[in-house]
Image (tube, rainbow, N blue to C red; front, side, top):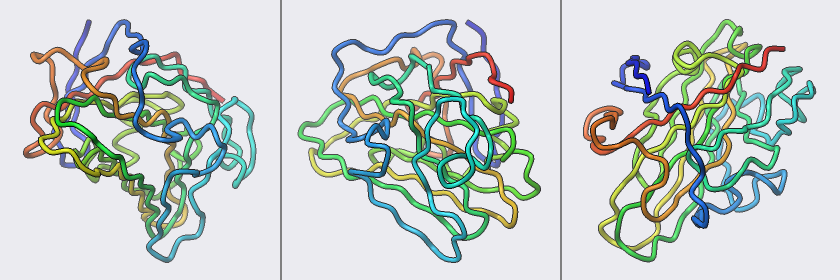
Length: 239
């Protein structure tokens, strides 16, 4: 097991590289349609802050190049074959954020019926062609009110982990009171033409699933105590 530390656009982030990992057998994902298997945003709530020039889409991750809105503007996106994080395998589809201007949001309300520890996370992928675009974009992701990526930039994600690579970002959070909690993603393009990003395998699982040991937990910004970021690389799928 090896470690490296990187800084993502003003947030402190330590990444743990895991040599191996498997999804927790029998775990139940409380996120509905977390792998976008319906090929659309069923169970999710979409939002925009104008001016948005391309809406978020669910696209196939089958390594076939397609134009928007069916694909990532000609980028062939690899399937998410990671086994860390979510107990659910990829369905072969993922959420794609690509607006050059304005903000796209994606959210879901999760009913948490009992207090306790929950494993939370999602996978991200920065396409190489979008990464080459001249303008940046900002991206944030929070689960059950816990920020796993707090207003970082797509360029920072791509430079840290590389492009055409699925990355699992995960942690644990303690829920003190049962109730409704949210999963929230936000993407803002900084100008024509902006970088883009994909999200897949969003999960909330009771207990602990594939999170770092306490000694290797990362702090993702002020107050984010007890969060870990898991990174397991596959060989890059160059196009």
